[in-house]
Image (cartoon, rainbow over all chains, first blue to last red):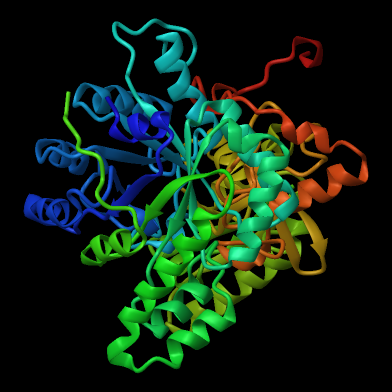
Amino acid sequence: MSQLKKILDKGDLAVTAECGPPKGADPEAIFKKAELLRGKADAINVTDNQTATVRMSSLAACGLLISAGLDPVLQVVVRDRNRIALQSDILGASAMGIRNVLCLSGDHQSFGNQPQTMGVFDLDSIQFIQVVKTMRDEGTIWGGEPLTKSPELFIGAVANPFADPLGFRPVRLAKKIRAGADFIQTQCVYNLDRFEEWMNMARERGLTEQVNILAGVTPLKSSNMAKYMKKRVSGIDIPDELIKRMEETPKNRQRETGINICVETIQRLKEIQGIRGFHIMAIEWEEAVGEIVGRAGLLPRPSFDQD
Amino acid sequence: MITAEQKPIDEIREMIAPYKRILALGCGSCVAECAAGGEKETAMLASTLRMAAKIDGRDLLIHEKTVDRQCVKDFILPLDDIIDQYDAVLSLGCGAGVQAVAEIFPDVPIMPALNTEFIGETRDQGYWVENCVGCGDCVLYDFGGICPLTRCSKRLLNGPCGGSRDGKCEVDPEVPCAWQLIIERLSKFNALDRLEKIYQPKDWSMKQGLGPRNIIREDQQR
């Protein structure tokens, strides 16, 4: 059973972390990250060719995490697969013992290292959530044909409280929940005011009662990273005062400040009603996760016995 | 209409290199509207190619002709009287025009002078925008007259995605977010409730289910 689901069902704050697969065929890269994250998070998200850049497949990397005794969250984007391939991967994932899936649109192909590829987008992320739920709960593929065995999956989706138009964001969140999302991971939170506004809107619609919202955080490594993310990474909103705080820190201590900001953010997020946990995306900096969760008072994590 | 742009001149010169007598065949419809393959553009291309051949000291004869609609058999058939004078046709029609001519004159080599681009509108002088994918099952009612399948970079039927910022698409800050436009339109008509609905996966068999599509209407046949 999904460790993530078990913890959320109990009503405890959950912690998930992220593991980006390598640009190569070396399984050790995954095992190394697995060791850095073991005991620090309840489930490990494995990104699916993020920024449209070719990497080891998310499904394969999740399989490696299972062999290492961890609970992976399989990220699946609709950019690269049509509904045949998506459903086939869902069945394969469940067969391998993967118990969490995160359904996303995916970064547009023009951002990555294969800009000449054809973007698939046969389903959108909401339709994909619905398809996975149908497979799990109705025991059929899309269109009604029965499965010999339903996949067992805890279904996740993403939400970006910082995208526009703000007024429509809760509508989209509600649709994702109606489509079948059990948990939501948000885009990295830096702008807490905006995030609170979004949470208030979600709460007013009763959405925080219907789904487990995990707030996303990413520690900043440097002032350059902060400026780059603000300017270049779509959907990221970093307030100027945070950029200034990073810039005013001497270069050799910026990582420390990045971790401080991250811990402070989690502390403030803990106060927001309806937050059920945290998703820590320490990009190529998995070493930081232990310190962040420790200082944020989220350790020890409950033990995980794979079934 | 169908929009197109002329291929790079070097690519055209390479294609026509083996031939000495060429018919440059324009089209007076869509590609004339988008200033790619009408009478004027056909004359200009022919004269450019003539000049280039002259500089290279090559023997090349190019005649120009523009038909009203290069994708309609009735307009192509009259070429039967002149086609034997040429050893190739350089078409300035869209992809449909090129293939229609090839179908009717199977023994004449035909080369495309244009890159066919999209179904779109002339928004302003010298400005054409794509706004229809020809999906075979129009969804414009649901989305206030703005097609998300064409104008959203991720073809979302339940958008906008997390990359919509200040009304622009994450792919290019010059590109308006189709979903922002849809929300604005629907809000004007008090129809925002349409966005609460989950739109189901698109039936792409209407576009590509049985390979190339055709329309057969007996009431129109004679």
